[in-house]
Length: 197
Image (cartoon, rainbow, N blue to C red; front, side, top):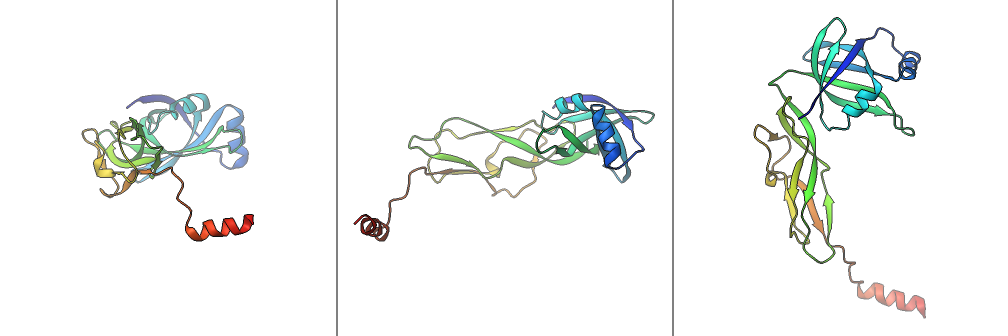
């Protein structure tokens, strides 16, 4: 689990105009909340934040002017739908040793059984509970030799020590589908012949 240090400034200006001015200075408006404290409005360095957010569930150590250091994880990130730049970020305040609910990416390894089968990700990320400072970056699931109709359940995934599922044990995470087209029914075949005639 990587920890990234970012310098943050508290902000007192709000609204669209203030947010535009912040983004014009290559910074990102954000809010830090959690633990029953009042939300703290921040200005964060845009480029450094963008690099940090490339790691899922990154732990961010915020050096907040006049308020000391706080640990946070990203909870919600808003991007411009066309240009993709960061518009706003919500950060959740966490403490070392505290358990948090997050979703971690699912990676697969291995080859499906021959036969042109398709692997469907029913869940793209696995909901888990983990210590805030030890959130795994991803879980890896072997799909080696799986055949059509096979599925991988949440309980089948090996989790690192200290990490537990935050979803039902029997939730389907991955399933293997047959890629072959179904044989047309007799009625459909007769209809096609009639159309050709």
